[in-house]
Amino acid sequence: MINNIERGAGILCHISSLPGKYGIGTLGKEAYEFADFLKKCHVKYWQILPLVQTGFGDSPYQSVCCNSGNPYFIDLEALRDEGLLDDEELKSCEMPAGDVDYGALYQTRYSVLRLAYARFNIKDGDFRNFIESGEYGDYALFMSLKSRFGEAFCNFPDAYKYTEHLAIEDFRAANYKSDYCFWQFLQYTFKKQWQKLKAYVNSLGIKIIGDIPLYVAYDSSDVWGHPELFKLDGELKPTSVAGVPPDYFSKTGQLWGNPLYNWEVLAADGYGWWINRIKKALELYDVLRIDHFRGLDRYYSIPAGADTAEAGEWLDGPKEKLFEKIKQSLGDIPIIAEDLGVLDSGVIKLRLKTGLPGMKILLFAFDGKQSNSYLPANMEENSIVYTGTHDNNTAAGYLNTLTEAQFALFKKRLRAALETEGVVYPFATRQQTARAMCVCAVASPARVAIIPIQDLLCLNDDCRMNTPSVPQGNWKFRLKEQPSRFHAAIMRKLVTHFKR
Image: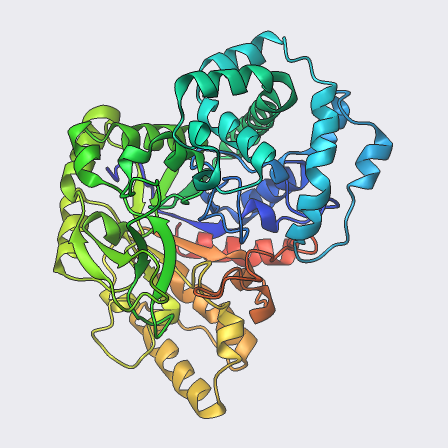
């Protein structure tokens, strides 16, 4: 499944983190300018986080629909150019530069998008075909119901909670123009704008690596529309939920709360729901990264209602059977396995059997153990190396937490790692050391090296994207401006020197 992943380098920067006037990164001109920056870097990959519409907590890993596009990413200036917004309305959407204020966006953005929708011709042929495809039927109904009742779906009136056919069809008819088509319009517009941006990025010789969360959110159209695929009780509430046991990130584990799949039901259908999900993702991305890959070998099941993730148990997932069905239906497709965290022989066996490249994180490499699998000397070519991920501190931020003695030891170990790669790169300060980690990643044996934009720019811990097990205040990081030609030159020099 890896035959389309070419040796190269890339940069990790989510759409929400792009600069701009409207409070969050969009698919507008700043995205095209960032693509041009990537071209100047000579990289082959742009990695992003899930593009989905976020829910409570603003996490792209907790979405109201796993195949949705985030309406906040819609380019408002393109809507103005189509005559759906005027200059005054566009001006009202401007927000201060800096971190994303999701609360302010929620209060203001949808009202402006409804203005655009009010001027849109819902009888347009392409739009009618989009609706009739049924791709976002469950999503549009689900969001219309949430707009009406303002609750999680388990608190909808029973006729809607249990999707009784006549009640649902009556609701759709009664709310067709006011709500149902509005939510369809958002996905139609997002998809049209994304396809245009992706075509431009691809025209520059750059592929997009996109992220697929293993799990879906409980309060989502996915669970509401297909409750039989999840471990729910008669009231459609989870009997057990997802997470991970105590680990590097948290002493009590991570209690994600996502409903767990009923893998027996999915298997009986030939994993059709998952195959369709992968197929839809391939329309958005060139390369797929499956988050929490280890949950496909064995998954951690926590009793619903538990306060922490300490009391869970490991249960068998679909293992290679899922990938066999995916290959039968979709052929060889490029997939990256996010195989971080607590691993056992089963996960390693599954990754080797599928042939998928795993991930290597340099921030985890320098504990002094020569057997550390994240050290470049121990990396296999069939892997993807990162300085850090969206769940880590930035490289500079991490280095700034070290005492002088710890920092001296870290530098010694990093120099030794660079020597094993045949690299002589002088560094002394913490910022220079953060840059040296980027050098180490690009010089490594891994097939692809991905540098988070924060690490290329040597930004501190106030620019990290997410702190696992901390529910609030994440996913806010934004660039204040486009990266400079200086930073493009740094990356270009690395890519050229190490023949990526």
